Length: 225
Image (tube, rainbow, N blue to C red):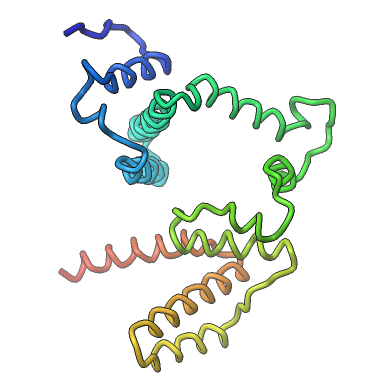
C-alpha cells in the first residue's frame, strides 16, 4: 500500500486525488468505493447543517473544519460523476466561475448598473413562468424554509397568500375539528403554511424564528429538570 505524500499544506487538488484513490475499484476503501449519490445524500445535508451550526456559534475553528467536510462532499459527488464520464472537478469550478461573472456585470463587465439578481438567474436558467420559478425551489429544503421561498416567488408574479390572524385561527379550528388523520394532516399543513405567510408579512424569517423558539424551549426544559 502506497502512502500519500506528506505536505505542509494540502490543496483542493490533493482532496480530489485522495477521494479518487479512496474510490479506486481495486485498491480503494471498501466503504468509499461503493457509495452512490443516493447513499450519501443525507451526509451532504448533515454536513451543511453542521457548517450552519458553526456559523451560528461564531466559532471560526469549527467552521473551518465543517466547511472542509462540506467541500469533501462536493468533491465526492463530483468524483462519482467523473467516473461516469459526465463531468469533472475542473468543469464544476469552471461552471460556478462563469456563473458568478455573468451574474455580476457591474463588477466584471462594462455595465456599471447593479442588475436584479433574481432576474439574471431566471434568464440564465430559462425560467419564464411562475411554474418554472416554483419548480426550481429545492424540494429537499426544510418545509418552513421552502414554504417561505415558494410564497416569496409567487408574490413576484402577483400571487399572494392569505396572511392574517383570522386565516391562522381558521386553520387551527379546522385542525381541532378534523375527523380523520388525513384531514388533520392537511389542516396542520395549511395552518403551518398560513403561519409562514403571516410571519413573512411581519418581516420575520419563519425558519429562524422557529429555530430560536426551539433553542428557548431547550433552555427552559433544562431549567425545569
